[in-house]
Each structure stands twice: as C-alpha cells, then as structure tokens.
Image (tube, rainbow, N blue to C red; front, side, top):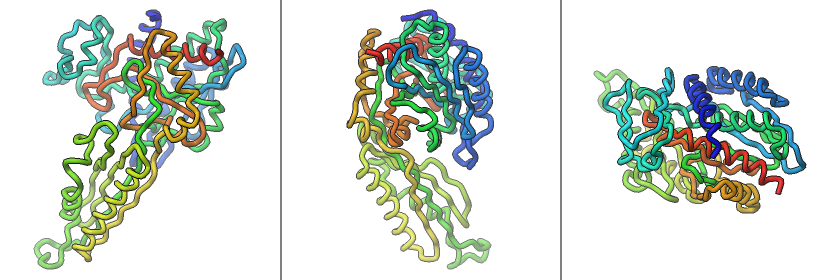
Length: 411
C-alpha cells in the first residue's frame, strides 16, 4: 500500500464533499443543477494546476482531460461523477475524519440518536486502525461519487508528477447527473476518445463489476374529476384514491426493493405528487434481463388499464422510458477490460470479486454506446443516507488499482 496517498485522499474528499453538488431529476437543464458546475470549475482549476492537458468543461457539463502516455497502448478512460444523490439532504455537508478507528460505535455530533456500528455493518469491523470519513448526521457524505473523483485526481497528480511511470494515453471524465441517469451525454463517447474505460463508483475493496441492472423509468398520470366536496355525490373521482389503489395492487411481498435480493428485479415507487384532481407517480423498473424488465413494465401498464376500466371517468396514462441496460450484454463479447482489471488487482495483492450490481453506473450507458466500461471499487459504504462512510485506506487501495491498470495495459 502507498500510505502517501492517504492524506491527499482525505484532504480531497473532505473538500469535495463540503461542496453541494446534488442533482435534480425534475430539472430539464443540463446539468440539472447549476451547483454541480461549482465542482466542475474547481476540477478544471486543479487539473490545469497539476499539468493535465486538453482540460475542457463541455457545454453538457462534463470535465475532460488528458494524461499523456509514455508508451504505445490502448487509450483508457477513467470516470467518476460529481453529483450526489437527491434522495437525502446534501446541503451543508460537514465531513469529519475518525482517525485510527478502534472498532467501536461511531456517533454523530448533529444527530445524537444516530449510530454506526460493526454489529449492523460488519464491513466496518474489518477496518480497525483505518481512518474513517463520515458526515455529521444530518446529511449524506457524498463519497458517492466524490470518492471516485478524489481517487482519480490523486492518481492523475501522481502520474503527472512521475513521468517515468509507464502508461498509455489516459483520458479523464468527470460527469454530472449520474445519480438521475443522465450522466452520459450522447457526445461523450466521441469526446472521450477511449478504447475502453472504467468508472470508479463501486463499494468494497476488490469489486470489479461488469453486470448491472437494466432500468426503465415509468411515469403514471391519473386524472380524476374535481368538484367541490360538498356537492361531490356521484360526481367526484379522486385521483388520490386511484393512486392509492394502484400502489396497493402492485406486488407487495415479491417485487419491491426491500423484498428482493440477488438477481431479482423490482418495481419501486419513488415519487408521488398532486391532488385529488390529478396525481403523478414515478416508478423505477429494474431487472437484470431484458425480458424481465419488459414484463415489469407490462405488469404496471396492465394494472393501470385495470384501474382505468373500473373508473371510466378517470384518465390514466403510463409512459415508460428506457434508462440503461445491463453492461454484460456487450462486455461478454469482449472481456478484455474486465480481465485487465482482474490482473491489475492481483498485481497489487487484491483478489478481485465480480458480482452483479443492483444498480447502474455511467458505465452502463457508455458500454451500450460502444465504450466498454466496467465499474471499480472506491470503498464507499451505506450510500445515499446519513450513515454513509468510507475508509481512506480503501480509497488508497483504489488509487493503487488505477495506477496498476495503467501499467498492466502495456503488457
């Protein structure tokens, strides 16, 4: 392990996490929030300062840069996303570092009833002596994926400061809006110019992921009949009641995120807004296989049709939009980048583990668009909530993996 990376990674992660860069699925702009550009402009400044070439902030909000190669080889892309998840408060993040973790309960200064223990999260128990980074209890941390950003920036700084480190040409990309499924602009594959790429957006040390969910987004709109409730007898059709009926009709014990695991997919209601006149419900549909994903969409549409038939005065629409597909469909035809990542991990004493991701990454879309892009670990844990944490030493191992990849690519 290279301990000199640890302090740099702590400094970068705590600085980056303190910057609010949450994305917003309801916004039509690109990027979805202007605050993400605060992170991007900082990265442009830092990349320029360490000597990266071709540093660009694109009009779709992605930062690109080049680390020149020392030897002929494939052009490799490395990616991380700067936005944080919209599911939990990300404003006013106060990162803190717990030095030399002793294996006990971690408490939170701004949320005294909150605690993080190895009994509840056994992976934490494996990090005795590590430097653990968390937020203060009222926000997420944002290691998803500012840990990836810190790892790539640390690796880039090291490579540019050590021109004798053998490597092919490397392309860096820091994307916005990954958390809302809009991180890969159609122009990115050409602008990146990589033969293949890797996202640093994974969890436990050793994870080399090349299989993700396939994903669709469903928007259900229920329009009822609005009338003064005092004169509503036989006339009012409540969109709220019909929305509740739809939710109750969906499978409750077999097809929700909390009742599924492994390779099981789900239908998950993520948002609901409106009133008695009109309700709008958002669902995410997930499955590892195309047929399973299509079946979940068909089921949701069938239920909407059935409820509409039971109340013909209402109008119910269900619009399904593709989001991303399982990267395995393309990577299984050429496992070169996966094999390279496995070899790079073993070269630094890490045994790689490849299991399906119950989620997706920018790599899912990039792979589908012609740039094979597995996902690699950062160390992040308990993401999208106040118990999010990461080990600085795990991040250092991810930085070593990035450097090992650049050497292995020349063999």
